[in-house]
Length: 165
Picture (cartoon, rainbow, N blue to C red):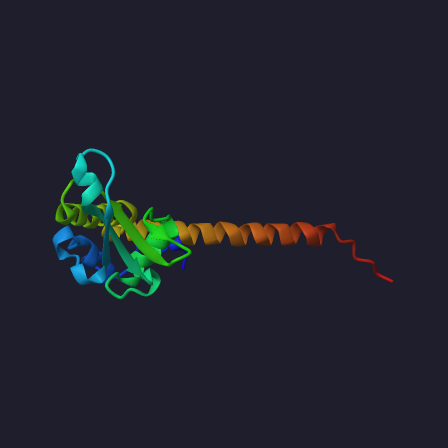
């Protein structure tokens, strides 16, 4: 079946669509990522030099991560997720926007959710009228194609000269 037509003949919500609709920063499990804290940059005076407040969240082996449904992972990889490190097969998200470790960690998770919401797309439900319309278009296109084939075949047959001996 043509990729364009697949969405018109799919049956109901998928696991990925349900997961995507329920995705929020609060729902992301904290044990999923490895968190590291480093020295921040920017404002903060001596605090910047003394305290490790920059948060880096890393999710290793992303292509096999079961928390993300297959459809979601495929779309993120194909559409070029900005946090995906291809050579490490990991998601790496960093934040040093605030002076607090916990707030930076929350910002990292929110960045991930925002990126997933931006890149992943699931088409909406299609009504019966639209399905019927596309079925008719497909049938007519097939008829036109077959008529063109017959016409070309007849044209080539008429060009050939039949020799009788």
